[in-house]
Image: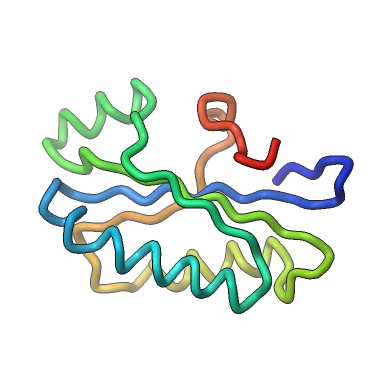
Length: 122
């Protein structure tokens, strides 16, 4: 969570796809659902398709032979947002925790990768 002088905070969420086929089938659905959820809550959303994975993640995924494609979704919260940042993060975790989307893995981006992927609003 980062707050700047303009009084907004951002949350980056990584979406991994098991393989190219699952990405082709799931990318539009996942992004549309996340954008719609954000829009309803008056939260800005930017989707970045097919990011280059950090070396340690790419290496671990290569050893698994899976999760070779990833997208990054940025969400920006302001005082006009209907949902607070923490509540939104919890809702996203719950939404995807038990989802029957085995070829898709959704999680909050760890802080150590935020320098590699700067916020589109900075």
